[in-house]
Length: 294
Image 1: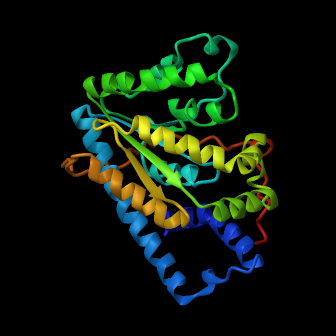
Image 2: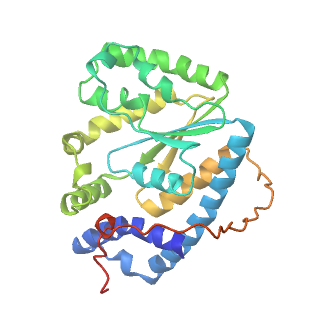
């Protein structure tokens, strides 16, 4: 029940989005089929997260190196999927990398250089919330990179990713695909929700204007970087919950993990000492119980 409550707290974001869509005339969230799917979603998500923990154990035990790239349009749902990946995993083994805009110094480096320190070592999983594919996407569309730099990226990236794979890194690339109307609904939700307004950046607003430019950049990116050793996997993400389940299940299918048998854990009895007296916490150190009457 504690796990379910935690997931329900995360689900409040989805409920707010659904309310925005209801207000806009979309009522498919009130049907019995959707309510039935929601019940299935929570059960299936828990089952998949148990498998993720088993995969994590295997990765740690075997020294496997797993790097997962999450790309897609703004508001496509990448962050929500990553939250569900990370929700039950050990952050010492599985971590998220979401790099800010490059500094002036980083702009003078070899383009891939600032990503290299974040790649997984043995027994680690790294989730890239956007990656070096920024150059083929936002940097190309918004003019942050010159055409020559973009061409150089397309020349270098097959060699770079081949080196990663040759070094023993399993590289899995996801692109989250949403339709024009769905992105608009999600941006409207961000505008209305005080918990998510921080997500709406000037780049997000500009992406609405340049929808077709981003589409052309995506198509060119797929054409140039869908390598046999590091293929793109497109997640249909108009429905956030289905996208999460599909993505997690697909990633589990990409890793040849097996359940690691652990010794049965036995909780030891607490040792009591007759001469020990617990020191009371002073009242001025206590956080007030604001909700004592609830």
